[in-house]
Length: 189
Image (cartoon, rainbow, N blue to C red; front, side):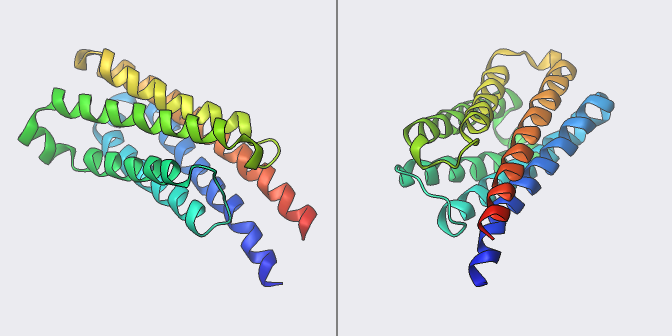
């Protein structure tokens, strides 16, 4: 019976990640001006949670990877990027907004590249039905990073809307993964 509880955790954490991303994305689309001020902070918290839950899933949640070091690095980068985003006001004053945007954009690209690499190399280890959602969520990180590097700060409202759509897509992918994992949990239990 103790094993049954362990099987549910990966689907629960994927579901939490999905709900948090959906909430942030919907807020960005409904109120882009208000979201611009708060989305930076909320997005940073979500990226920290995403990195922490992914790291926890790798180390304790039963997920496996052929490239554990790369997968751990990806989640640590997510946590560091989230901390940079949360500390945005202090960081912006210290290093400048443009530099911070470039740093976060590069980190998002690295996170997406690591996630894509781990997913494609460890495809055989992934549960059935989770490969494409993982690939698409890695691509969402890549697109977000590239957008941060190429979009000027003057188009911040457009960026908020794009980020909102990307967060909704990522949230839907995470909910799909949670649903797939939960279906496997029910079959096993």
